[in-house]
Image 1 (cartoon, rainbow, N blue to C red):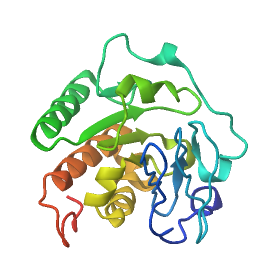
Image 2 (tube, helix red, strand yellow; image 1 turned 180 degrees about the vertical axis):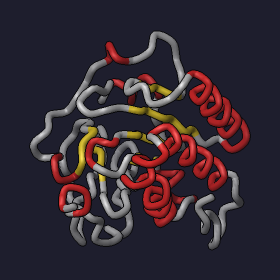
Image 3 (cartoon, helix red, strand yellow; image 1 turned 135 degrees about the horizontal axis):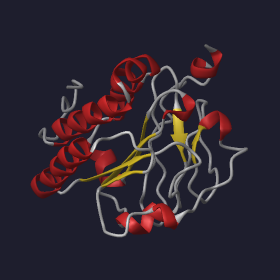
Length: 215
C-alpha cells in the first residue's frame, strides 16, 4: 500500500506565486498524489511549503520527480490539431469523439480550454504539448496516467485557478482517479467521468459555492 499511499497530499500550499507567464500549477491527487511539472511554474512539493522545482515538463509522480528526466517527444503528437491525445490507447473511437464534442462545447460556451492527454509515462509527448495546444491562463491540461496510482493529474491556468476552488480538483481526483475506481471500471471510465465533472463545474456561476459537488 505504501506504493500508492505513501505520497499523500499534506496540505494547501497557499496563495500561488506569479511568474512572467502568470501560469499557476495545481497538482492534485487523492490518497495517492501524482504530479506534473510545467515549463515556467512552481511545482508544489509534498510538504506544507512549495519551491521552484525545474523548468521542464515531467509527467511523473512527485516521489519520482527528482529522478526522472523531462520528456519531449513531438513525434507522438497527432498530425492534426485535437483536444484529446490518447497515446496510451485507453479510449475507444466513440469515447474520444464524445469527449472531444464535450470539450468543444465547453470552450464555446465558457471560454475555458480543457485538453486531455492519456499516457503511460515515459511514453508521452511531454514538453511538446505546450506549443501544440497553445496553453494559456484559460487552459486546463488533464493528464490521465495510472503510472503512480491516482490516474487524474491537472495543470490549471491562472484564470481558471481564480474561478475554481482548489478543493474541487482534489475531490475530483479522489472520486474518479483513485486506483480502486479505475482498476474496477477502467481507465476510460475514469477519464470520461472526470471530463464530465470538469465540464459541469466550469459551467457553474463563479461564486462562494461553485463546484462544491463533484458530479
